[in-house]
Image 1 (cartoon, rainbow, N blue to C red):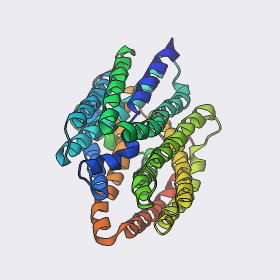
Image 2: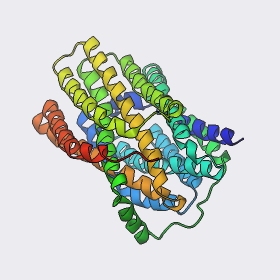
Image 3: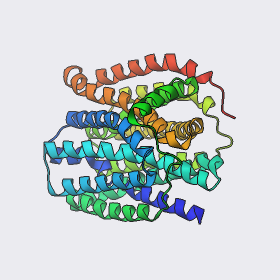
Image 4: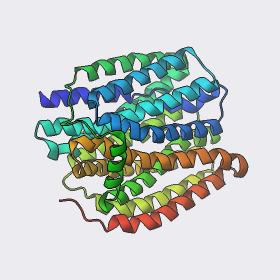
Length: 394
């Protein structure tokens, strides 16, 4: 029975992650009269809003049930899909991205906390890495399959059919979340001012701080890579169906990361991943820069698939990192520590994406990636030694 409730949560999140517009979001923007630069800018705004929402949502997640936070998140996403279905234009898309940021922050802060609390209530806390890995598998599978389904539906029927199907799926996911048990905090979380003080105290712990910063650097670069796929494919004159293939590959590999984390959790050591990921990301930036000069479809496809693999390794690191974080705090501060973690990665992503509007317009795409590469190197040279020296939790 316990696993059945987790299955319902996983299926609800699978459907929530079935983002049918995701593989063709650039084409959707262009149908609304927007450009590649606007896509990067709006995604930057998305992360700024995420940053602003982190602390209030973390506070909310520690003072009401995680299930209620998930329900509100899913309800907002349903509203966005309906909004985009019936209206179009610059401000409508921007409003949707802003609301989507709030919705995603709520989901990200609540889902791991709900899972950990549920496992704790059923005396299975030690299995968090396993179940968190499987939950990430469902999330990635949803987005991977949406890559194929969304592209096919867009090509055959247009974006309105894509959004109609998305509305249907999110309603089912809402019903599933309604059916899972409600788990309340053992005590009311701190008032907002104490919540901020608590966040500061948590962040003083070096075992938390350096992993949070390093994970944030990797996550923000992964966001940049993934968001670059469609513009790079369009620049290389890929047929539209390839947008879906690459999206499926990207999120399919992410799904495999969840399975690996769940199956091999006892053998995986987060500390041993710190240095390899540093070199993988140097390689990824070099590959991105290389395909700006080669428009051969076979070469570009091969490069994008390699970068997908690197992003998959980063997600494996992130799964271990989030599972590790929950071991530092009690139930009443779980939303708080996730807010801190997500705040850092989103702040970094926002800086990269918003600055892209200026750098791409003034200096061009290649110099923008070179500047991003330089920032990655500078941050990692400081963080990698600090992170690597931290011992594994026992």
